[in-house]
Length: 123
Image (cartoon, rainbow, N blue to C red):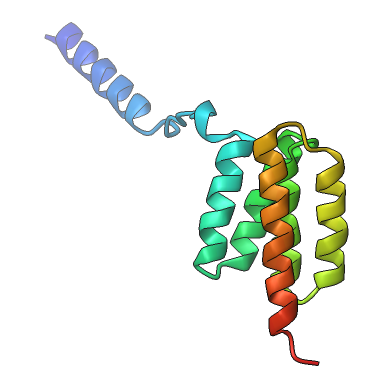
């Protein structure tokens, strides 16, 4: 009887110990790519969440320092913050590291968007 009680206490202790352990963190490597972070950043920009978009573009750049669309996003953030000249400088850097025709289109789109911002700024 005492042996059965000891076994029951041991099982109960083990269950409580396992149940109170740290939460499992599931890594989703497919979501931690420069492409995904740029996509997230662009979505956030369209909703006016400039700081959150900036964080996404910074993460994309940290994953791949030569990913031109990350620089396009950073330039657009600069434009939204009123630093159009800095945005154009960032786009020039992006133009220098373009690796694909799609990236070149993204850079051209960035220039067009910043030019649109410039035309709305009142001096």
